[in-house]
Image 1 (cartoon, rainbow, N blue to C red):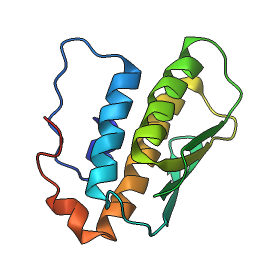
Image 2 (cartoon, one colour; image 1 turned 45 degrees about the vertical axis):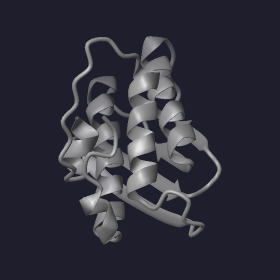
Image 3 (cartoon, helix red, strand yellow; image 1 turned 180 degrees about the vertical axis):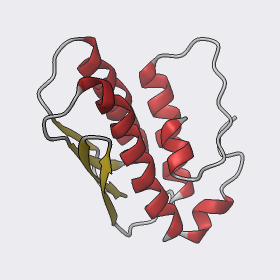
Length: 139
């Protein structure tokens, strides 16, 4: 919900039991549909965000071959959770997503990544008016 809020999307999400990959896939399908499913025009949006003590760089290319690149050394469940969500999102959305985070507090990182990602989607939707009217894409 953080990413949708930062992108100014009206998102109503409820899931009794869903993995991060399933949520990423669903969100990716909605983004693909909203931003021109089947449109051959490649569109790139990026956002650099100072959030707390962090500086996050997020670049999103829509209508491209799927790729997720996360530039930050991490280990354990934290990295796996990011990978699971964002890899599923990029495959479903046919998008390339690069997220770069310099050294930062791990506690701030989670919120900062999703805020930056959401704001990048917000830039994309502000430049694509049709995306604002893509209501009830997935049920």
